[in-house]
Image 1: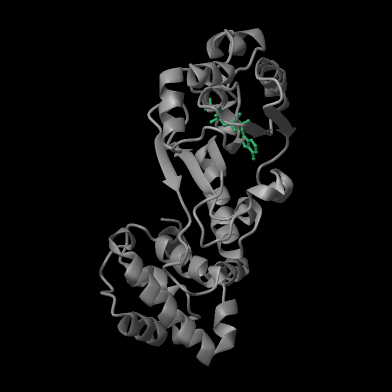
Image 2: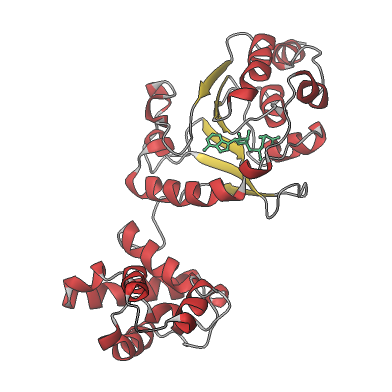
Length: 306
Ligand code: SAM
């Protein structure tokens, strides 16, 4: 009886459907902002269930839009929900939801790329990194164009234990969409590990992974090459792949985490021998070459962008 009563306090009172909210506030999805909305509450409930048990949890939802996932988070019993939305058009609809769940919803009109989550939740939620994850979750359905830079930023925050990770190993539940209007979204749940699998500075790991994936359909050797200036390219590529014991004809998607770890460790050794190496930027070299009117680099450029 008690449990049922408690649950009843979590459940939202009857509200207009998300479709009605969209009509009521004239919330057309902006194609140029890659917006699309999840209208089916069974689907949003399913996404939220991927976060695990969020009863009494403190949740930050990124990009709530008209509020489908927002409702599911509230119905799942979140204690406090902070929503960060960039587009002002959604604020009145979100305000309506906030009134239906008194004291549980905070609305932030802002950009999640710059929003400081460090002070968003009470300090007493903080856990040591080695402990179980804190009672804090980040959930969101963002366009691909935002979720990719955001996840890179958050991976760096994991390494620095900043942003959402000042509370400890905060869990993220994010959807990834390939195309606008593709309703069949993929949901990824992240829990930071206590120990990173690659013990190198984030910037180094990012540089190696980014370079290798620059040519995702080519042999991994092609991506490793762009870590090095032209004069030493062949020799250092060979050395790096050899000491990492990685077959140069594997594709980036075929490499395991261990192989990426070995590549990062091998690159680190080369950078320790020649500290200038880490500052080498293939894109910069490409830009300089582009400025040179005499030469044509069409071939290099097209493979680079491939
Ligand atoms: N969560 C809603 C849903 O599932 O129906 C809306 C999803 S829509 C794909 C993405 C939402 O993220 C939009 O409401 C958009 O305005 C918002 N958004 C996009 N970039 C953002 C940013 N940098 N910061 C905060 N919100 C953002």
